[in-house]
Length: 555
Image 1 (spheres, one colour):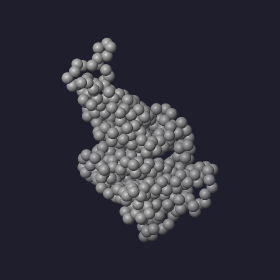
Image 2 (cartoon, rainbow, N blue to C red):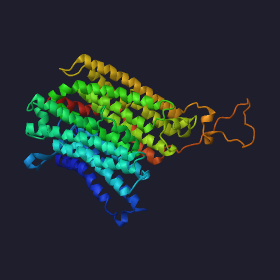
Image 3 (spheres, rainbow, N blue to C red):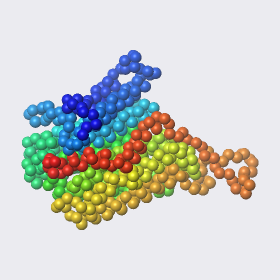
Image 4 (cartoon, rainbow, N blue to C red):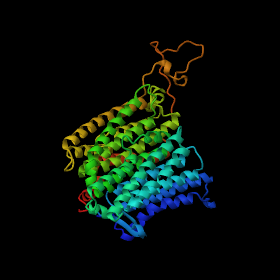
């Protein structure tokens, strides 16, 4: 069933447009603006250009989704297959199915919202032209990663996002941005070198780099030893990007230093490229190798879940001087641990849960980073002790709508039933209860129990954050800043009420949610509710495609 019947050639054009348009837009952003389009100044013109290009890509992606045949989500649609490098049998092969379509939509939506937000709140840094061009190159590389069906093209697209993100952190970031940017680029490049070796091994041993043909072959053309080596090599590169514990240490620094839109794109989109690679490449192409490493992958995943949660609890405690952006970054380590656990089960239930958790994490954590960026702009800091002690009323008293939305995002992140965060975690735990044939049930049920314990830890630190940031803390009078105390005459007596009690401190107001902020954040909040109340919208797309992938290309 298609909502609107769109011809195959138009679908092909739309997918090619979605991948290429941001790249062309990036080139155009660096050119002088035509006289009639400059607006008030050239900076405004280029920012408007960014909104226009990302908006056009989002519209094209939505039309692509509308024209998608939802009765056959396991079938590759909107396919383009053109020979590019005949000597290596490398082809420009594009296509989407029920696994990649939601990720395309998520990427197009988040990039558009980031461009819209930046139009009104551009981070401090060099030329806006360079900023817009880098965001568009980042979008093109990410969309290409989810759309290409050739292993070498996948690798090129996978690497294409590194340089833009490096410069976004290094030039538009906050404190320690240079060190964080270098750490990001070194970790990911080293992982990518190993991944390229694994990709070349698969291509040379199987005789093709075509991901559809390799998935249909289901590893039958590769010996078990080749599969094991390929999974180890490719898996390391993907695990760095995911990021999997203990290869995660670049992530908190990168998030803490990155500008708000950089953090949103890093958490909401870039991390998904790693987990997508596990599902699209390793599960169908090297099933025997995956089966060998699945218990280890699951073990690292649950350690990451617990480690990320404990790190968040340590940052959230009073007196720890924890950074709220850093806390949300560590929460991503835990959430992506659930995604990896679902993939490691090698079951339809677990993999569907992983794909659902991917989308939910992109929506919820993208919203959280938007909110934390706004709070940091208002307070001038993301230090939890400062945010909690600035006033007894905290956000609920100073910016109630902002506080309410932060509380909503936090409870969505902890997996409250009825919101998007719940279904992915629940399905991955169900998958771990009954893993694929050949995997140890006792081991995976132990992993399930540890993962379930991690959900309790997640609830604990998120509720602590809500209590401290939204409600504030009862601090001694001496800890309040002079600006937060009730005004009184310099030499006069201490004022008192009818019962001789000092009046409550005044509560300086902060700017609450602005119109442009509401425009950027409302879609994420609405989709978080929609996915939580109507999970079949997403699972109906992913499940047939996952079933086919795990069955070796047979529906």
